[in-house]
Structure formats: C-alpha cells, structure tokens
Amino acid sequence: MATREGAATVAAEGSKIRVAHVLTVAGSDSGGGAGIQADLKACGARGVYCSTVITALTAQNTAGVQGVNMVSEEFVAEQLKSVLSDMHVDVVKTGMLPSVGIVKVLLHSLNEFPHLALVVDPVMVSTSGDVLAGPSILEVFREELLPRADIVTPNLREASTLLGGKQIETVADMHEAAKLLHDMGPRNVLVKGGDLPGSFDAVDVFFDGEEFYELRSARVRTHNTHGTGCTLASCIAAELAKGSPTLSAVKVAKRFVETALDYSKEIVVGDGPQGPFDHFLMLKREMQGSRKHWIFEPSRLFLYAVTDSVMNKNWDRSITDAVKAAIEGGATIVQLREKEAETGYFIEAAKSCLEVCRSHGVSLLINDRVDVALACDADGVHVGQSDMPVRVARALLGPDKIIGVSCKTPEQAHRAWTDGADYIGCGGVYPTNTKANNKTIGLDGLKAVCLASKLPVVAIGGIGPSNAGAVMEIGAPNLKGVAVVSALFDRECIVEEARKLRATLDKGKTSNS
Ligand SMILES: Nc1ncnc2c1ncn2[C@@H]1O[C@H](COP(=O)(O)OP(=O)(O)OP(=O)(O)O)[C@@H](O)[C@H]1O
Ligand SMILES: Cc1ncc(CO)c(N)n1
Ligand SMILES: [Mg+2]
Image (cartoon, rainbow, N blue to C red):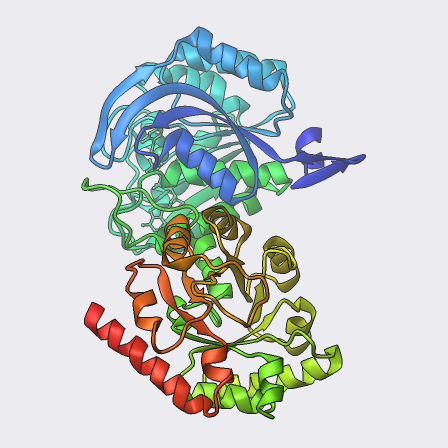
C-alpha cells in the first residue's frame, strides 16, 4: 500500500505536484445524481482528482431507470488501460458492474496493479427498485472481487443478497451481516443503514475484522437521497487517496453525505419520488456566509455620491462634512475621489468619513487607492481601466470588499464580470467637466454596457436632477442608480441637491414599479 500512504492530498515531487487520484469504474446516470456523475462531484467536493471508466450508460431520472446500455468488455478494458497505463491512480472505486465479464476485466487490471487500494460499492438494485446488476454477478463478487477489496459498502438489500437472502432488519442484524461479509475476504465492511426501517438515526455498521463501530448521524428528512451510496463510497475513496486510515475516511464520508443532504433537503430537480442532492451547496453557502456581512446589495448604487477634492476646496468644506451632507440628503453609497490628497491626510480623512458612513449604514469606497482602502478598512475601491486591474485589487483586498470598475464598452463590461468586480460605473453618459478628455458615450453607450454584463451598473457623467430620470428610463434591469459629483459637491447646499436628486429617482422608481 506504499503508493496510497505516500499520496497525501498533494505530494510534492521535486517542483511537480502530484494529486490524490481516484479512478471510478461505474455506470453513468443521465440524471446526474448517482453513478459516475456523483463520483465526480464527490471527489471534486473533497478536492481529489477523479478519472472515470464507464461500464454502462443508464437512462435514468428521479422516477427511476428507463434503460441500460452496457459498455462492451473490450471497451471497458480499453478505458482501464488508457487510465492505468498513464495516470497515477491511488484508489479504485467501483459502482455499477453490470456483467460478470466486466468484473473479470476489472479484476485482470487490478492484478496488474496490486498496489491500488480498492473500494467496492456492490451496486445491484437502485433505490427505485431497478436492477443494475443481476444475480449472475453474485458469485464473482463473493469469490473474487470482495476478497480483493479494502472496503465493501453494501446497503441493506445488497448485504442481504450477497448473504443469500439473509434478513437484515435491525442494527444487530447489520452487525451479523458485517461479520459474515468480512468472512468473504474484504479487509473492512460497511453495512449502510440508509434504508433501515423505523430508525431515527442513519446508522451504518463498520467492521474491520476486530471491532464493530456503529456510525450514527441524524436522519435528514428529505426525498433527495438519490446517489448517497455512490457519494459515500467515492468520498471514502477520496479520503483514502489523501492518505487517511479507513475508519477516519468512512467517518468523514458519512459526515459529508449527512451535511450535503441537509443543505439540499429543499431543492427540487425533478418530479419523481427520489431526487438528487447538491454536492457543492455547502461550499456555495460557505462562500456566501463568509461574505454575509458586507454582501453587495446592488440597490445601494441608487444614489452614489463621489467626492471631489477641488470642489470641496472651492467651497471651503472638509471631506467629512461633504460626505455627511450627501448622506443626510439621501446618498446610498459614497466614494472618496481625492486625486491630489497626500496619503497620510487621505487615510485620516477616509477614517473620519468611514465613521460617518458606518453610523448611517452607508458603504464607503475609495477611488483608485487600494492601499488607502486597506489602511482604513474601507468597504472597497472603485478603479478605472488604467488603474490597478480588478483581479489584482481582488487578490489584495480579498473576497469581502466591494470592487467597482469604470467601463465604457461592452468588452470592458464583460471583463469586469470575469475579473471579479461587484459593479460597473458606466459613463460619461453626458458631457462633464469633472474628468478631462473623458469620452461621452450617451444613453446608447450606457445601454450597450448594461446589456453586456450581469453586474449591476451605476451611470455617471453629467447627471443631475434634470436628467437622472431619463437615464433611469433606459429600461435596463441591471441599471441600479446614478453617480454624481458636481450636481452635489459643486453646489452651495449639498443636502438640498441630494434631496432633489433622491426625489427624482424615487419618483422614477414608483412609476416604473
Ligand atoms: N436521510 C438520510 N439522512 C442521513 N443520512 C442518510 C440518509 N439516507 C442515507 N443516508 C446515509 O447515506 C449513506 C448511503 O446509504 P444508503 O443506505 O442510502 O446507500 P444506497 O442505498 O447504496 O444509496 P443509493 O443507492 O441511493 O446511492 C449512508 O451513510 C447512510 O447512512
Ligand atoms: C449508474 C448508477 N449507479 C449506481 C446507482 C445506485 O444509486 C444508480 N442509481 N445508477
Ligand atoms: Mg447503493
């Protein structure tokens, strides 16, 4: 078992990195819930590479199995040869093995690679009651495949069939079955109790030849259990491939299945009685969870105030006072655009603005200066096309900060999405004095950018109370608001101007809804 032991999740070999690798030899489930598809997802979720030798195609959905098309023995052999002659496999996991001939072909390959660990999920009957491997398979399973296995994972029905029809209705029966199956030669046995009648827990019995372990988890109340067996066996294989001892691998795998079922208990994929679950839902939720506190709510772009150092100087106002007034008038997000400010002063001013913004639940972004945003822990940055690239800013700021990017063209808008921006600032919509040599793209340019991206868009450039309504009326669902500079900060009373703008925007919103 040298290879398995040596293949921790990723084992460095010089400068190359070797990945933990499971080969699944199983059937395809067109519905994507069990078989090869479950194995790929399970290994993916556990961070392990998975190659696939397909033994049969099934036409299958949440109602059951409508058809089976076996792959020829010769072609199963060819797939095995392609993978095993070239790739560094740590563990072979078997699922649907529909004919004696296919099992023999597999055994032949395993003989050639005696170091490979073997997880056997003796798939025979699907939960829907459809036969995936007939009784003719039993002898070769008992006599040849099980003795070669490091672990075999039958469900109740499969354990009973392997044992010639033994009744298994209680946990005590499962112990007995595990012991009898162990006598057939596998190193470890896991009798799965997913289908144990009347049990509150999902109990599996593990036997290593010496000790019995009852592995219990809460029974998730769900119809989405299609593919639990395949997933469990693949997870065991994945953990073994990383180098775990067998009992730990089984415990991790069972926990994975339980958690995946729990996360997926409400999903609806098909109309049949037994749905699949989502192997990645817990990861998706985790990702969302880590961004929960800030998660960017596009409606925040509604009235976006962008400060301007020159204007504040002309009107003799501090940045903080300007920001306070904009928020009082109804600004929903603020960006500090201080092109000339010295870094030390900028950080202090940003901290003071941040205090004001936080106390009003308004996000504060910094224009261009990722360093300043990091220094004062602002909510994010807004970058232009020639500033720090979005990808680099994202790498520096991490997943929790908001990143906006200025775009004038559909290409830039598309790029913003792939690079990981949270929103697009699009303009100049109208001519403006705030930015020298800034090309005006008009309402058509704005529309084209909105159409080109899934990201929320805020329009900018020459916008004020007189034209904000027209901008919002272009009718793009992802146009979430307007950003203004002069219309607020180059006016005598910021609060009043902000209120006027807010009123115009609010009016447009009510008449559109
Ligand atoms: N509702 C449930 N809640 C929690 N765990 C479950 C539930 N149903 C099954 N399990 C667990 O899932 C794993 C697979 O067991 P199960 O008996 O369902 O296998 P199976 O019948 O081979 O599955 P399938 O044929 O649908 O792929 C076991 O660890 C079992 O305890
Ligand atoms: C292809 C395939 N393999 C295994 C199972 C057992 O769930 C299934 N339903 N379909
Ligand atoms: Mg099964």
